[in-house]
Image (cartoon, rainbow, N blue to C red; front, side, top):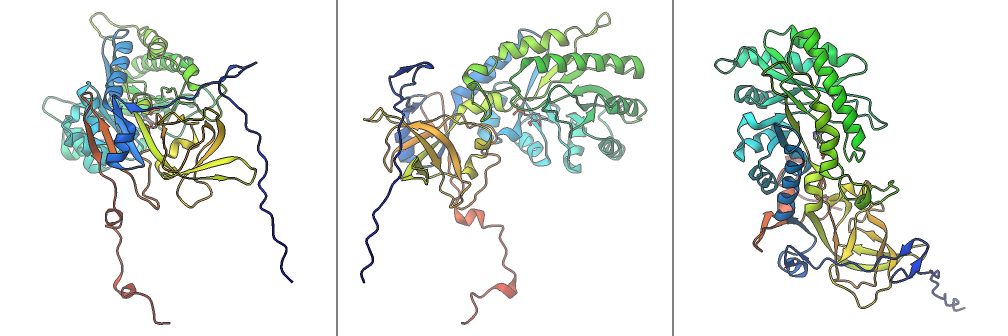
Length: 463
Ligand SMILES: Cc1ncc(COP(=O)(O)O)c(C=O)c1O
């Protein structure tokens, strides 16, 4: 008996027409597109370098650093910006930051080395992190880097290294800072440095006062990341002033620099945020207004200067300067009838998609202005490979290009080569030039550390 023919069934979907209509929430957004980056058409860049493609705007980086410096340098006498290397340690990105006057903030031996290779003197390196290797610590000690101590064992380790390699001429003790963590809100980063409320920070200061090799000269705190409440910085600054006074009173040490870390927010929107990042992200001036006047209340002796003020900003300087261009591979309907697009990049290139509701927009305007909420799936052959849910997108066909915007912080440095390898990174310069600043990875590159023991060589066993 012939089997009855099964009729294809597709769940009906209601598509909310978002364009041009007014409702109680106001006018729906029209379709936005991003056709070019600093005057270069994205379609031509994708044609020339392929897709997916990481793109960086040199102009956008320079503008952000200049905004930062203007906001802080007009409110405090000696401000030093340290570019947080781990946020994005492409040589090109770090070099632009240094050309704009930033120091380097590093958290590993390899970042320390990279900064040195890029021509940064050790004396303009801030060395943070819970695990600094001995070789780079030796170089940091000899070169006068700002070493920020994270734990008691590290204090003892650095003392030992100072005894071993000595200090530069005329320096009696190595000036160092301690990292301090403090309870300011729910997002308490308490796993780094010495805790303030429990008295550990005070204990570390006393320990350094007894040291024959080290002298406490700096205080460092990093209150978290994507901190969009400037009041948290205001309170942190107040506690730094109190601690500096305590240190002066009970140990006699005078704080010569303080470092307020990184952590400023960007205009990206967090998944759990009520408001869009466009609305909630404070300006650099608002951060500066929260921090600088408080730090300036530190009482000074006649002739004494306010401590140098360091920042180690990452996210806020680079997020908005970098984008990921992807191409649509296919369209499909998910089990609930909703639309999904598969694109040629996966979450291995975009780890911050777990945090951010990234802005995803087409490169070209489309004939249809009807937008449908769409899930953007990656190309990894993994169920978890979802770049974004609920993106209002018009009808798109395989081959069309989309841009995932403002992805400069952490995505590249945390990316993996999983399945397809990493794409190239192209920097667009202020004069319309496009430069590959990281080559597309090849299978030969990512297999070069793979080793096959002799007893496993020779192919598969006979059947
Ligand atoms: C010690 C330290 N400084 C600076 C940063 C940079 O922070 P952000 O990218 O949030 O500005 C981080 C990041 O977590 C950090 O751990």
